Length: 395
Image 1 (spheres, rainbow, N blue to C red):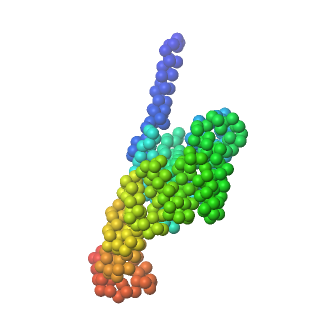
Image 2 (image 1 turned 90 degrees about the vertical axis):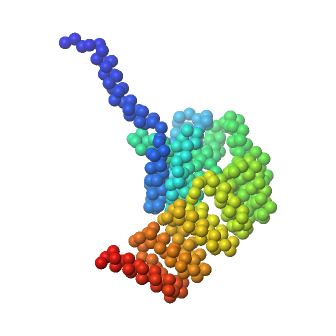
């Protein structure tokens, strides 16, 4: 039988037809819905205490390669450096992620053509941060993270990694310093002074640290990571020093949300509640409505002696996040401090709506600080209403 010369060609086209959908799927742009689903899954892992699984969703080798971009390294050198960096990242990020016990997916962002998922995270101690996580497709399907912009540090983790490994890279590649971009080159030259200032900061020698940072060349004093170090030292050296760094930060990075975050605590410490409010409002413009930031506002208003406005801020927080337990804690405290029993009942009813299986009376009946409320007519009416509702549900 004669074989047609077209058959091998047809076979090749058939193979390509089968493969092309797979190739297109792997290279296809990530939709907002896909990214949002990925973001919600990461937030759920944080909330379930599974920070190790969050870490498994991050391609640390891809992150390391992003940090090495533009460096004159051969494949073996790059692989060795990235492998070592990935091991270090796995340990450091694992420790960092463990502190975040609560998370909320906020939205999908797009930066430089890359999809990002924006999360808020909160620690058990009440610290908070925002992560903008860069998404990419996995070869086997689904999404992974390949970088993380940490709002409190003001930079991508790949940039932080790059700065940490550059001294070792430069030690191996003596001529590379001249080929680095100007800013990086100057930072590497100033690294001994930066290390001295950082060591003094960690020891609590704030004046020494600030003096070291301020002796740096001007172009090395203004990258965000250096401004952060300077501000940490300046906050312990007096208001004028602190204001000097903040004003320099504002000049170089107008409207920077990182500055708003680091300034809130300083304003609280100085009891500058109007300043704290300004920074909160500025931060919320960048982050969008966020329940935890409204709780920060409520605490600020409470300290400023404005409890009625503080309760309103709590209610705004719950309008955004009905399951934000910290909001109920603050609401109970505000109403209890004012001995506003109707307000306590309103807070209890809102909590029961959000958490219908919670046994609030068990907690209230065993807490001595709630004794006055337990004896009030409002408490009695609340309990009777609960008993009536239970009887109707279970006749």
